[in-house]
Length: 325
Ligand SMILES: [Zn+2]
Ligand SMILES: [Zn+2]
Image 1 (tube, helix red, strand yellow):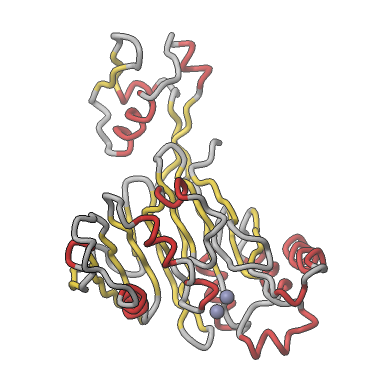
Image 2 (cartoon, rainbow, N blue to C red):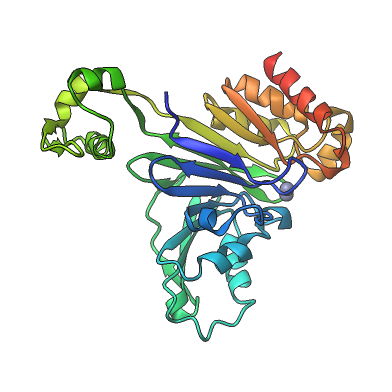
């Protein structure tokens, strides 16, 4: 099965957690947390449509300035989602600069703040000098974003402050069987993207033109002939900076259950559990166990404490031993 989402861990294991997720064939990307972003080039940054922030500790939010710097002249809306305080945090960042000469810039920033089961939305437009304007939220929590391809849900966890975890669920996965395709005398091309789009919209009686030919095929026929097959969509989850409490861990297990991929912090080693409790972070062992109990297929650790510089392999070993056990 060809994946729909491609993950890139932007920084080293010991540095700020940032995950860049390319939505394959759609030409845009999602960003999870905005820590230090200098390893992303401006072409990559221009593709970002959605930013999901877990919380505004500096290691998760310092890159927001670079994001705005690069996107300022973009004809787009950047959608930002975050926990209690995100609207004030964005307002604070934007009010730290002078914007009198930017009215020709088209960038808009739409911020959704999810807190205690409710959602608030604020729009900041460059044309208006980034003055905040309230907006009706377009989704009902815990769903925070939805399009034809996937949906994103969130859940609050405790880290001394509320932090958000995120789960992305592809609605259904559409695979093209190239052998069957060729058997019908058809070839791979951009028309397959249009075909999938029509299938997702349920327009099975429509016809689609095959790229480079004058042939047209019926959308429903491509399904009945097995050229396109439907299967369960990919699911991945992102969990950072949660205190090692039973309540947090049980909530996280329920939230990420059945994920194909789990991106999770592994901040401390189990031998430093006392420190993990004080600093309200998971240990590698807890992250591994959580992933195992939630039956996730693959676990990707990130956000390891810099105190383990030179012994990162111990952290990884602890996580994977507890995951596979
Ligand atoms: Zn952190
Ligand atoms: Zn934190």
